[in-house]
Length: 67
Image (cartoon, rainbow, N blue to C red; front, side, top):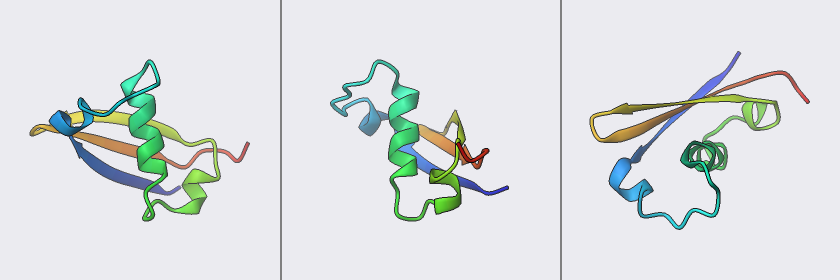
């Protein structure tokens, strides 16, 4: 099972013009859109987790079942 981790500066993320109601969903979408994120993750029903560490959002996507 593959995972992919990406970080975002909290102060930067809070300045985004977000059209979604949940910041976590935006973080998951931006992480999945990263060119380094494996297709095995983006092509699956991945799950996501957001943690806060040292002024950063740390986003981890984990490969799930193929929809």
